[in-house]
Image 1 (spheres, rainbow, N blue to C red):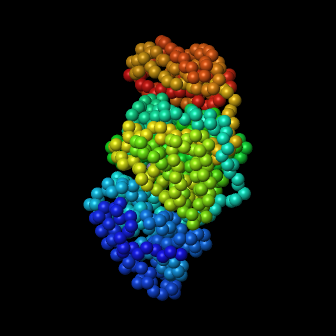
Image 2: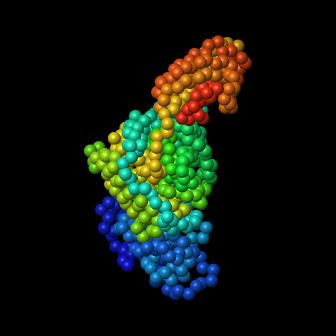
Image 3: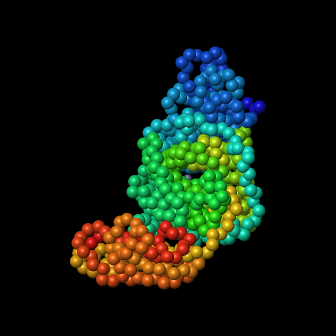
Length: 598
Ligand SMILES: [Zn+2]
């Protein structure tokens, strides 16, 4: 076993660190040297009532049966694997492994792991004011305190909070066999449907370039910050409504942690043969900066757009296993939304978690590298993560994406995104991200994280391979029989806010977004109906729509609608309102438009 590097020596990677920062690090390391086990805890007898410390233990080998609780399993900038633990000095001494105390009293404490992605952009003054306990060359470790998360993420750190509970260190049961990747026409078909145009249409709406339709009304999502209030509420509602339109089973999960609260959005395609086996496709919806506008195009409208497009395409197919798309909030504050979700599903049979976070930046004309981060090789779960990563690499090769993206598998335990919450529960998971070692988006967490900075061909290929991976993990894809699928595409009123006692006109556009032609039946409209209508409930007016080809739209005009007395109203339209034609998705036939009578 190798011993840990002498912390007082300059690190080989110091060329990538500002000189002043290196001095600060040297000073900190000198401090740690004062706390080496020999100088602080010479004996190995148990001390009654001794307080737990927060410590780094260097473990070059397998971490199974280590005998201490593991709070993180990481690799430092010099490629030395280590674990973070909270335990008594007596236990640490008994381990007979190199260790370093990071905090002498860990009782009741939580710690931020702050991944520095700034590549030297963070100012030395700002760094000098941070209460850093440890720096492994890739990330800083700091004690949790209120408000520190905003300071750190504004500076450009990605955060994970540790200390709440140790990781579940395990390998998944071996009886489960994940099919290898052999080329499937259904997957080729699905991958072919992922286009730059589809991805762009979600990205522009999520990043505020184009208004999104939320609750029937246009809304510009100018920030998705977890603490923004209305904007993140609208953003999560937008995602929920899109998933519902695709025909997924949707739900929210509310969470609350350390003074923050929010909701995750979950959409599910239920498996046809083994629905209790679940594949998770995840992305965080929230973004930075904390104040003002936050377009967050790469971080992480990119991952969300890829997940939405995958959900929309995959819903037209059936799979053996269940596929769940989960959009988290609270990621930038310390992975709070995913921590809550992973805890909720801890007893479910999760096949694997494919987490996408920042998948659209690649410097023009550079090698299109992307990274798949796994747990370190000494972790019993490493092999489970590797299965997921190898499937992705196989998909890239099998479906001809090798000239557009180059996957590099990196088993460094990088835990600065939501997949880490699933590692904590002992699940197979990986982080799929642009080349965060050598070609990372310099605009992230700023107003400049916009779509114009992104590489759309790279992003599109990344999204194609991600969908292909999810489809192969879900297993045995087959296209559902061709069916029509009628939706209310838009509603507009003339005038938009009619005067009391006047009459107004409604224009309703219906569309067949399905794969076969069909009779769209009757379109019923209600001038004021807040709740959904059951099939065959008569509206205030109705018109026959008739036959619609796949992709075809039709506009119907309802005239002379009486405005009545002043007040807030909800206009409702219901296509194929007697539910006569079998559709691919039966639950998305109604649309609403809130309006006001003046
Ligand atoms: Zn992110």
